[in-house]
Image 1 (spheres, rainbow, N blue to C red):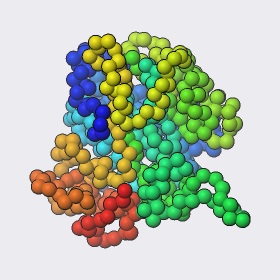
Image 2 (cartoon, rainbow, N blue to C red):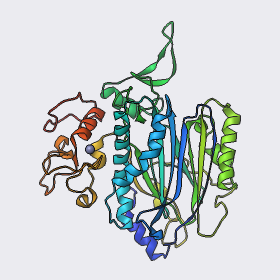
Image 3 (tube, protein in one colour):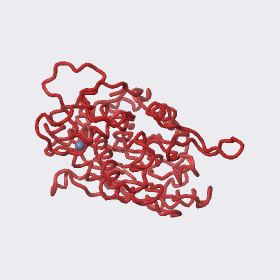
Image 4 (cartoon, helix red, strand yellow):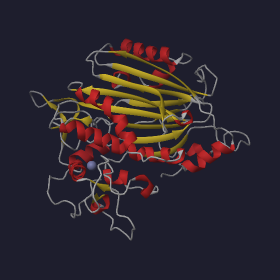
Length: 425
Ligand SMILES: [Zn+2]
């Protein structure tokens, strides 16, 4: 947990003590202009943590932007959510469930990618999944679709990161360290054109689901960010790069101020079309998270102070500034969790009550049941010497272990369990 982040338990306790147990109302809409037919969405406002119990409702909004065909996007649309939910153990409290989400998202993304690659279909997809439970918003993403949040207080937050080689130096370093090549297309005369791409394959993205023909260093491990809104709410805009290549975040938000969600999504798509024309699929989902029974967009009109903290990242200092006279609770978006590491072991091996999180002898990625001693401990290849521990898990099955090694740029090997590996940073 980074500096400035507030533990989830503290936030939920605070919520209870302020009698803010009421859930927000969600209003949402989407719009699309299709050029290649490779963008897909999945919107489901009424999922339940406990089947039949409406007080355990949560909502899911997902955007997939496929490339080299739509097979990966369609497959992910059909399987990603269930793969994520299957990675959450049953019988968790709400607090535990929310805390388990970041890991379950990592496992679900990797399982979806692995299963799809086994079908040996070409094509790949970005995936941006937004899970809303009460005032807590969790976003996991690979690729260059983007989810931004404008709080009712007028601040704008990036809830995803761009896995695009052109803008992400860290990812370029990771891929070259894993044995991939990153460069532009060479045309006659040696001139380089276009964006940075990864070779073989020529993909501009550094993370995706699918892309079996590109190389395992294009990983499906998502950036995950979890925030909690104040009960004044906010607006989420989830769009494919067709929008972000045409509009800045400020423009996308300001062009639809005051409009209800559905109309806002249409306006954003129309503005993108106006700015750049139809060169790519343009898809936009808008979700308004509103105080209960206040059925109008909560957003401020443009004015002084809005957009003041555009794109502030992790551990924003102003979280600790006193905001409201004598108010015990800062009326801003609070950051609970953020991790973008591409190293699977780091993402599954966390401090949260681990025995509760991973059933003892199940693969932490694909949930395959294993016999005792059959799984490979994630700690087996950990750079740290493993200390005294009553439990050596979480474990991976053989094929998920092979997937993990491939993503770290290691050559396929039969006896990998005991090898201590170099880390790729
Ligand atoms: Zn497995």
